Length: 247
Length: 214
Image (cartoon, each protein chain N blue to C red):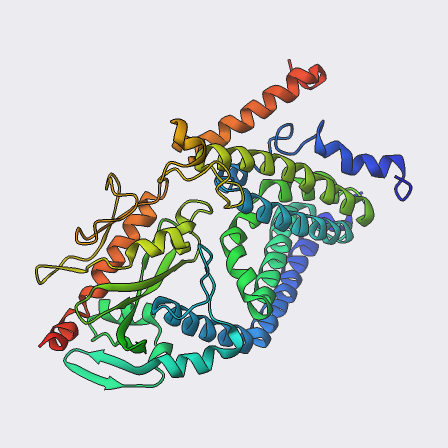
C-alpha cells in the first residue's frame, strides 16, 4: 500500500504549510528584533568612527573599542561637526553618520549626486576628517572609516568585512594591518594617488610612509586589492573638499 | 558511561575515530579546507556546527514520520537554514560582537555536507535522543580534525597559535626566526589543508587496516 506521505496531494500540502510556518516565524522574528539590531548597528558606526580617530581602548597589540555605555557621550564630545557634501554644497547634519553609503553608491551609479558624509573630530588639539568608505572584497562587501588630517595624511583607519575568508582576508580588521596605514599619504606631490595594498612591497615594518603603499596580507590578494580600490575610488570624491581646506 | 547505554555511547565515540565524518565519510571537507588557516576560526566553526547539528538532528527526527519522502532534501535544507538564520538574528540583536565573529561562518554552516548527511543518513530513521547523540558525536569528530588541521596550519604557516606568536617575531627576527627559521607561507593556502587532511587519513588507515577499502 502506498504510504500516506508518498501521495502528491500530501507533498504539496506539506510544502505549502512548511513555507507558511517558516516564513511566518522568520518574518515575525525579523520584525520583532529589528529595533535592537538597528540600535546595535548605529552604536557600531559610532564606535568605528571613534576608533578611526584614535578614541579607543587599545592596549599593546589588542584592539578594543570604547565601552558601549559611554559611546554616545564620547561621540558628541569628540565629533564636533558632521558634514554632508553634495557637489559644491556643504551642509551640516547631526545625523550624517546614519547615511547609508551603500545606497549612496547605488544612487551615484544611477547618475544622481552622491551625498558624501564627512565627520570632523577634535582630539588633543588636532583636527581629524573622517570619511566612510565601502567596496568589494573577495566574497562580499568590505567597508571602513578613514581619519585624515587636512593634507589627506591618514591618522587612523578602521576596516571591516561581511564574509572574507577567515584567517586570510578577514584579517583586514586586525591591528597589524590597520596600523600600517597610520601616517600614509593619500596624495603625492599634490596629486591624489590613494594607498595601494602591495605585494612585494619589501617594507614589512612599513617604515616608508611616503610611498603610498602598505604591506599586503599573504593569502588575501583579492581582499587587499579591494581595499586599495575602495580607498582610491571613495576618497577621491572628497578631494575637492580637501582642496578648499588647504587654501 | 553510566548515563548512556553501550549502544548510545557508541553513537558519540564512533564518529571520533573509526567512523569520522571527515576522514572516513569524507563529509564537510569544504569547510575543513576553507577556515582552518587559524586555530580560532576552526574552534568557532566546530562549536557552531555542534550546535546546529545537534538541534537540527532532533528537529528532523521529530518530523521524520510526516516529511514527504519526495521533497525530504528540500525540507532538510529549510530546517537547517531556518535554524541558522534564527540564531543569527537573535545574536545580532543581543550579542552583536559574537554575531560579527560568526557572520563569516553562517553560509558555510548551511552548506556543510555533514549536516545534510547526518539528517539524511541518521535522523530520518531514528528517534530524537539517538539523533541528538549522533549529532554531538559527529560534530565532535568533525571538531577534532578541524582543530588538528588548524593547529598545524597556524603554527607552521603563521608561527602563532590562537593569535599568540609562539615561535617569535618573523619580522624583527626573534625566537626561532633568529636561527634562520621561516614560516611556510604555503601552509595558509587551502591546498595545504587538503594535504594535512590527507596525511591524517594516511596515518589513521595505516594504524587500523580494517578501514582500508579494496
